[in-house]
Structures are given as C-alpha cells and as structure tokens.
Length: 218
Length: 50
Length: 257
Image 1 (cartoon, rainbow over the protein chains, first blue to last red):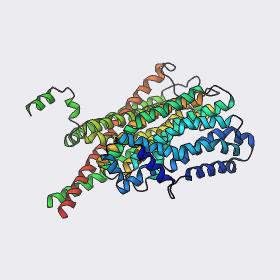
Image 2: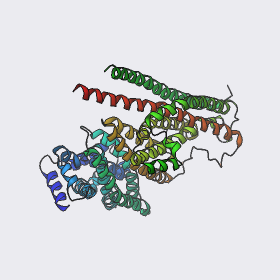
Image 3: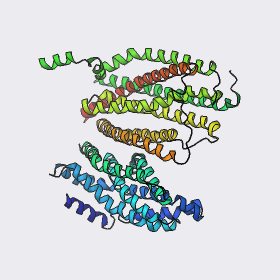
Image 4: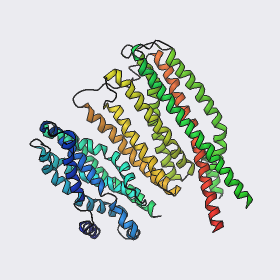
C-alpha cells in the first residue's frame, strides 16, 4: 500500500501531474475576491476565513477526477481490483496522496494568503488548524465522488455537482471554527465536528468508494 | 375571494406558484408516459414482425 | 425447490414483493392508478378550498397563515420522498428488484418539484415576515441543500448509460448523500443559531393545535401524499416501459449483428 502511495505521489509531482495547480488556483481565488468585494480591510478581514475555506475547497475539487481517472483509462484500476491489496485500502492511499499533494499545501499556504485578505492576528493559526483537520475530509469525500464518476468522460462538472453538497458540513464547521477562534470565542464544538467528519469519512467512505469502483469496473 | 388584506400578494403568489409547479410536473410526467408508451408499442410491433 | 416455495408462501411480505415483478407491477399499478388519481383530486380539492376560503386570519400571521396549506405539505413531501428514494435504493442493492430502482429514479423529479415549491412558498412567506425574500433561515437553507442533493442524484442517473450500473451508483450516492444531508441539517442549524434567532417559518403542531387550521392541513397533507403516489405510479410505469424498450432494442441489435 505504501508503494501505491509513493507511485501516486511521484505521478502527481511529475510534469503534467497537476501539482501546484491547486495552490495556484487557491492564490487566484484569494486575489480575485478583493476585486469583487472591494479593498476595505475591515470587510476583507471579516470574511477572510470564509473566503480561504471556500477557496481551499474549490482548489481541492480541481484535482479530484485525477484520483482514479488515469488508472481507470490505462487498466491499472482493474489490476488494483485483483491485487492482494484490499480496494478500500487502495482508496485510502489514493485519498492520502491527493491530500498530500493538494490539501496539505493549501493548509500551509492559507496563513500566507490570509495576509492578502487583511486577516486579523491569530487568523494564521486558526486557518492552519481548521484546514489541517478539515482538508483530509475534503480529499476523502472527493475520492468517493471521483469513484462514482470514474467511468464517465468529461465527468468533471458532474463530479463538482455531486461533491460540493457533500462538502457543506465540513465547510460550515471549518469556517465557523476559524471565525470563532479568531474572534476569541470558544471554537471547540465546530472543531470537534470537523474532526468527527474527517474521522468518519476516513472510516466509512472507503467502503462506499470501493463499492462504486467495483461497480464501474464491471 | 376572502379578504386577504395586506398579505394578498404573498398568499396568491405562493398558491399560484404551487399550482403552476404541480401542473408542470403532472404535464411532464403524462407527456413522458404517452411518448414512451408509443415507442414501446412500436418496438413490440417490430418484435412481432420478426 | 419445495423449500423455496413454502418459504415464500410463509413470507408475510409477499403482498409487497408481488410488486417487484415488472409484469405484475404494471398490472397492479394499472389497477391502482385511477383510484390514486381520484383520491388525489378529491382530497386536494377539499383541503385546498377549505384552507383557502374557510379559515380565519391568524394572530401573528394575518391571512398569510393560509400559505401553510401549500408550504407545509410540499416541505413534508420533499423530505419524505428523499427517504422513500433511500429505502427503494436499499431494496435495490439488497434484493435487486428492478422496479425498486426505477421507482427511486421516478420519484426524484417529484421530490425536486416539492423542494422547489417549499423554497418558493417559504421565501414568499418570508418577505412580509422578515422583510426580505431570502433569509438564511436554517430550515430554508436546509431545503436549499436538499435541492442540490436531488439535482446531483438526477444528474448521476442521466450521466450513466448502463441502467444497472446507474441504479447501483445512484443507490450508493443516495445512501452517502442521506448521511451528509442529515449532517448538513445539523450544521446549518448550528451555523445560523449564531447571533440572532431567526424566526422559523413552520408552524409547530403544538403551536398550532387549533383545529380550525389543523383539519384542512391534514387533508392537504393526505392530498399531497396521494399526488405523490399517483405521479410515482405514472412515472415508474414509464421507467418500466423504457427498460423494456431498452431490452427489445438490445435484442434487435444482437439479431441484426
């Protein structure tokens, strides 16, 4: 399974692998918002946690269809299905690879980008924390969505339509946790909810995703 | 028509929207049913002619 | 063979599984449909006319209370239809009854329309109450999210060519989607409890126990449910026919090849 992880990581870092694309998109969204909303620091600072969360979420979305698509097209997914590695384990590894390449860089970059949005002090820590706990959920939920649509050519838009509603709870609790933490209020409830969603997703969604992959491979 | 007072607009428009949408889904379902029924009859006729 | 037959004879749910066979389903539904349509027309007419013409103005809401006769039934149906789709999806995954999968597919459009009606009537009602057409009230917001789940479900059905694969994948989506829909409801409640308590639009049964409003409301609820049953039968019959056409066309293509 580790071999699978390393292989996916190597593939995504190679040219055309999409590494850095998510980060660039995240930056672009962060830059576009002030153009749309106005440069007033007070306003930007207030909405910064939400903007960063939405931006991170959309950036994660970008690379989701690659999780299984390439392997599906060249037959590696069929081989994976018959390999001694359980499909569920393979799904987790692929989601992990996606997180390492997309979610984690976003989490590290968010505090920096927050500066562009006049995020108040303390924001850096809270964005980092909430994204760190929440982005794995995004990768795992995204992997489930990718498994559903793997058989479709140009399934990217459908994938977004399926996955974005599933992202709503994570987004709400993540952004709430960040906003409350920054304002100095108690953020434990939303933070625990995000952690719960991540834990639950990693524990249960691999089974749903593996089932979807097996259905698509028939 | 009962005296709806200042809420007349709200009540009438919400009821109208409901009736419209219900009529729409009934019409669409009925039209789809009729179209598919015709296609099936045609397919069954073709099957019998073989 | 003998054992299977006696087991089926003893199975108390036989009357339900009789609907699972497509041919039997078409026969049974054909007989039930006229009654469903008749029942719908009668109950909806009685309920709506009673509610619109023969109810008094309410204390807080004035005549806008009459909106409950379209808002509450549609909202209830929006949720109940999703639950029905979930159950039908589970039956498909476990017992592989095609009619069940097709019923789930058929129900989706009805559910979407009910959700939209709930949203529109909710927004229209909100305007005089809150002074704005859209307020991120937890209940309305939850219905907006539910609307998106319905859309995704329908889009997935439409995108996949093979009917059995589509049935399987949409069933998995319905299950996972239901978990997240519940989670979203809790999340949205949490999200909007924030600084001010938005007034919820629905009239609680406790709050509104007054028979004057409750009786026509119950009739409307029954009417909308029967409307759903009638539409579901029509739409599922269409799906069963579509499946037969697909099978015939496959056979034609094989024979011509």
